[in-house]
Length: 312
Ligand SMILES: Nc1nc2c(ncn2[C@@H]2O[C@H](COP(=O)(O)OP(=O)(O)OP(=O)(O)O)[C@@H](O)[C@H]2O)c(=O)[nH]1
Image 1 (tube, rainbow, N blue to C red):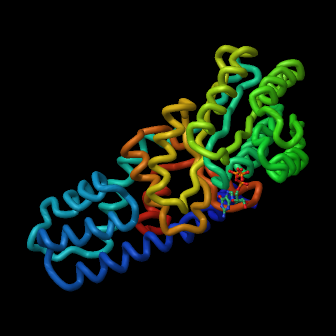
Image 2: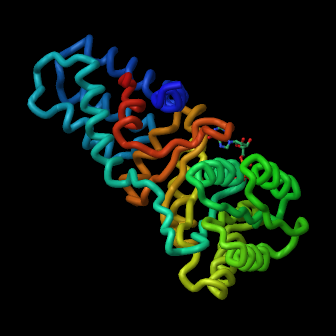
Image 3: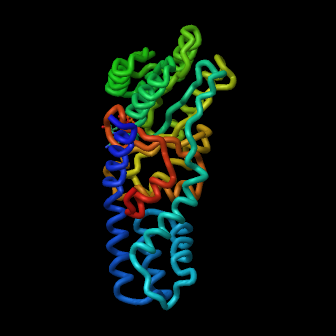
């Protein structure tokens, strides 16, 4: 098998996932540009199409301005518009496309995984455990989402799949003390990475945020530099709602990076561009399926091309 194969497969899933965005964009743009020469009204129409693709007002305005640059009263092809879209989107994404660096001097390197219920936290932890184990790191998982028995079981399954020990308590047990115990064990066992799952399903936001703050406070009793990374997992299918999730979690949990999941099945992947523009938080990985290999490092140029509907 060539090295290219895995990339091809996730690229296919990402680009087919984003196809609903890119093809509605492509069709709308093709319709617009075949009918008339470029004028202000056409640029406004292009801007509307970009807004509907969830790219956000600033980026949409910037792209339409870039499309107009030097092209007024001329015919323009759909491919030209797509190329401008890809190039402008890449400019927004390039500064945030950053790998997750595991600092080997922090042992264990503690990663707290946060996000609302159903965003894909547990699945992402499993996929990350697979990646880190394949890199030769000793991983431990902590089932800090103690609210749902199924979430604990699900993490245990990922532990077995990736041969990573899982520290879990009973359903309803205190997640902060579980995180404390997990970090103590990970230290004793000289684990390289500890991935801590958290709940996303408390009655209200204040309660959820208080619990997260408590988890952070308690793990700092074991290691005052932890957590070394706080990953916010966002479900791409929620579209604009992702903005308020980033707002809430960033304020409370000090998010250090994002993982966007479910990009294989949504017309709303453009939201990643709006997030990058607004929050400038690093984007480390994207989820493009439910399988163990379906987490890909985030690359700005590939994502920008997929959004614009350009083949790589
Ligand atoms: N298609 C697709 N499905 C995904 C992806 N990531 C996660 N899922 C699915 O989304 C659902 C929710 O994922 P979980 O990992 O359980 O989400 P969670 O945030 O841990 O949710 P709770 O445990 O309910 O708080 C599961 O059915 C996953 O298989 C992805 O990238 N693509």
